[in-house]
Image (cartoon, rainbow, N blue to C red; front, side, top):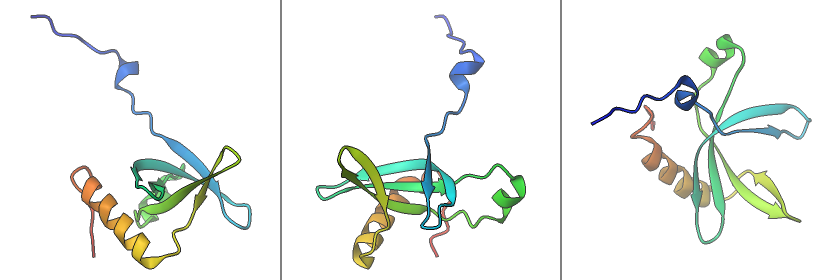
Length: 106
């Protein structure tokens, strides 16, 4: 039985990153941790990324959850304005992600 040895390029972590802009034009980069698709919509669980290690340590580590919409073939990301919808989706992401990450659900 032979063992396959992977080279360094096969072992590299390659996160799925997206950049979002706020209303003031400031850009923020997020890592997409998970996606959930329902009959009504698609949602993403995002984690902010930082180039500065100090900012990384200061970050709360809270997930950012957005709703994905499409208009004229372009994807757009929206805040979830309905509290019940947000709670349902947030709970689903927590259930899915808690086995991979240490999540403080308080």
